[in-house]
Length: 240
Image (cartoon, one colour):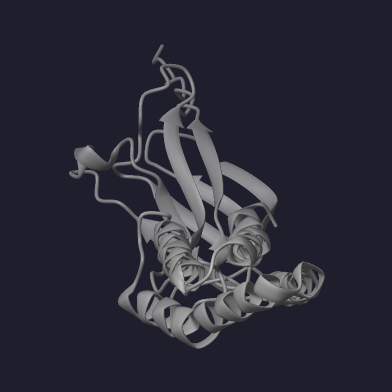
């Protein structure tokens, strides 16, 4: 709902300027002959529609095809749909509202209200979820030394189990640049996992009942920190 608020506000106010423009032109026409009020009203309505398009260009409505959640992105298909919507619906309706208001303000207000409520219902009933195509892992585990806190990802092995399903990842010990990077598992697979991290010189780290959920498009990653304890030194027997 919060991400649709700008579209709802624009939908509610889009009919207000044509209503006021038509009403003002009607009042002026009563005191002045000729077609000047009509021309001024037509130009004003066109200018308002152009402004409305510009505002929607900056924040594309969620009901347009191709719209994403990135406010800085306006895909070409969304712009084309906005142009079609403007030419086919918004501009004609604004002209009708202004024309009715020119004669009857109350009737124009009723038409504006009906159009606004219809547009708001369309926005609220639109599923604006746009799925991305990248592969997401449900499990991200950062490996650290429990005492120093230093990254210990290089040389570690991550094992994730969910019933008969097992996924694992082993990082070569030579890849020291991966010490601080998280290990990953369970690509696009929700479930309840037992997670184990192993590394030579450290005791195994384990966490059970790690629940990975998902939304309509992807899994929702769970981030864990495995704090490894160094293996206890085994005392050696001394000869007599």
